[in-house]
Length: 486
Ligand SMILES: *Cc1c(COP(=O)(O)O)cnc(C)c1O
Image (cartoon, rainbow, N blue to C red; front, side, top):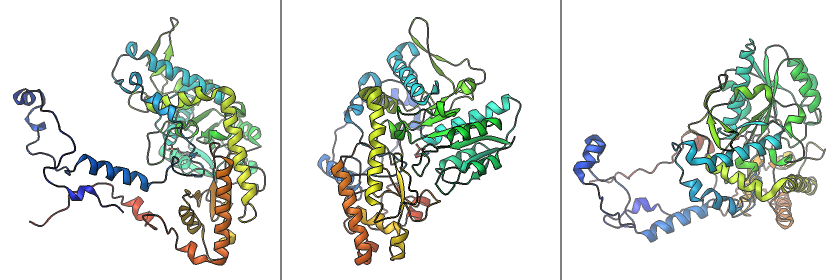
């Protein structure tokens, strides 16, 4: 690990020269009040510009990223983010806007948002869209709260939300946060929702069924029309977790499958850098019956072609976020969509699905693939066989780091033991996919011949194995000035 330059502060050393303030001190006192003025300078580390540049450049190189290597992290869609998106998001006319500017002054930004809403409406088959939610999980909360208000508006207080046992953890968490009891629906032996178990749980207390299609095993729910019919016959609504839209972009629409509401992760499917906590964007798209409940303000187009913010929506659930969403992510998604167009977006999904099936076919002998049917944009393997040889999935994941490859998602979905969930995405070349295959096959050989080598990996990373539980429960992310003895 490089040493922290913060700990090597040298008093008086400077990287920048701050110009003298043009505001006289007595005016500052009057403007801010004495309580807001510092009495002593902040205790910031003092270093030269060169040392600061080297420090942050070294730090940035410690991280794996999609710009430095393959990143097959299932369910996360770590695809390449084209740099033109960054240029668009940084255009001064977008980046320098202030959220308090009146609508007349931000017509370009509103036009972009309106247009993006239309695209998302067209791609989902659910025409009414709100761009406010700041992440996928936030979009889920928005959607489920709308469903709650919908039932209340119709005089029902339904108490339960159904989720499949393969669901992403945010689904049950969302339903619980919105005050619902979470009821699990079993998957069948093919990794799909058991329609019989679903029907057994459907009654007049069920508000919604939350589903992902393809599901988190990367499998397409072929019975989706029977599922949506059963859910609607019970008076419940169908929620689509569209975080993994990469699989079906331009090929099939949740609205046509009978879903009432979908959230999308713009930061996954529509290529915004993510991982490490955001910012993201999780717009929701809904059918006619949920449209009145969408958050305010709505972006509307007036007959004269200008755009405005509409707050007059009596049934709206309120606001889900200060201002209008993470606008920079919206600008990136817009750029991505226009760079591809209809046909290009369709090709994205075809290629994502092809890549996943290619890897599944090539790795299916060395590792076990529990569900044999062809997959969508990702697939799940198990290292049960390797575990029997004394090496678990965690060690295989750690060993991949030695080859400059980010591990896949592991131990998820929960219904597959020793799971490894691989999502190659459409942006990797066949050569890179082949290299991944060679590495995985080599690791399978190592498990058989030199298991200690795998069990003690990683060998090349700056940090070996960390206590992940401690890191999650007690994250230490703040620098404090070391206490020096006086
Ligand atoms: C990523 C993901 C989410 C959550 O999205 P965030 O933006 O991380 O909140 C929800 N569901 C699925 C299936 C996902 O892959």
